[in-house]
Length: 110
Image 1 (cartoon, rainbow, N blue to C red):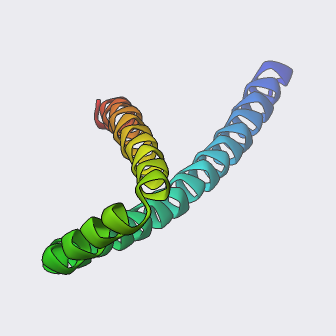
Image 2: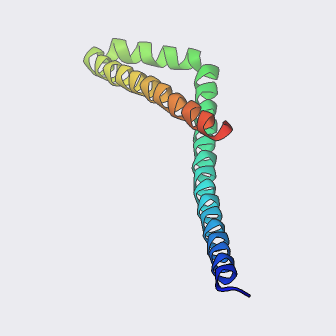
């Protein structure tokens, strides 16, 4: 076999090994992403369950908050302000998270 053929075969082998390593690295990254998405889905399910529970008990919560407002107006308004901040923070977080997920979906789909 000529030295040029040997060099070409060795180069081909190195490239094949490099491609295999890159495939393994990509598979590792995809597994990390899938684990993160699975955790995100579980958190989303928990948040949906909490929302359903709050909707089911809306009357009781309304009565309790009205009693709290009548009994301790300052404390109730403080909690109302905190709740409002949590609501807006959650809304912004959802918006940002949806944008990231849409970008990731677009990057992986084509």
